Length: 351
Image 1 (cartoon, rainbow, N blue to C red):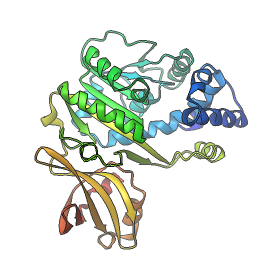
Image 2: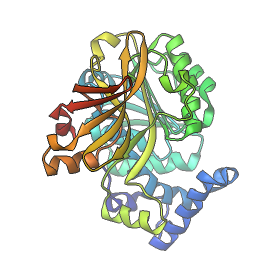
Image 3: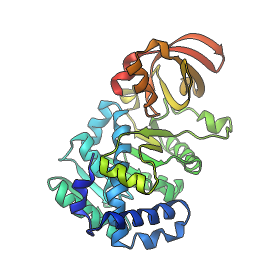
């Protein structure tokens, strides 16, 4: 992804590290405690530049991880569609798609209501991706052909009802959502999922089928989210430490939907999605997985024995992101919803 050294010459304002840190603290406070201040912060060139220097490169890792979990046939369809990012900010997920898919020749549209965010996105575009076909706008234009809609921390803001209307009016074939990994966001995404399925879409990620979400159905005081664990560029890591905000471990909620062609693209049949790495105990990993049984999805806790792996492999599994698709052999059913398993080593190829 993008190191700070590449981003800094493209910022709207030339800021010192001290200024960036101060602005990032303002933004963090606005995101978590003082939402009423966000519009004012987004009207400041210094704050937009600081956002682009820190949140843009770290959020890009989320898209990189999500794409690594999707079938290649879907990625081919992404490359052949016009990709519209709703709430693009400084171009975060458009640039992540260009980097991860090596798709300089795709057509992109970045949509945002903040003129300064769009100005920042265009400056990054002109400097770093001058050959890419990207249009920056305050609204969604009419686009011919296949369309992909990307919601990047924007569905959470607009609500599921408005997002469903956008999907319907734009006749999107593929819909990608990268939203905050919070309980409130999960409730919103659950309603969005229900609406998308009613409108004829199939969910490809994270669910292994369109069956009811077991967390919602069983009214568990919990939520399904992914956790992206990554290494940061040294300069980004330094900023992270100075503002006391961990960006090496990032909770998020990822959803991917497609209209038609589900059977041809679904590669999760007979496999299991890790929804939580519960505990790392001396002899085993305890993970919660989601699986499909008939028309239903269910959560099962599995016990993965460490003795089946080399020390180096155990370390890889300890640092693994949550959200991988895995395969295993059940060695013992400890109870109906707790199994001891022998994990397929194929997961190690992804780590």
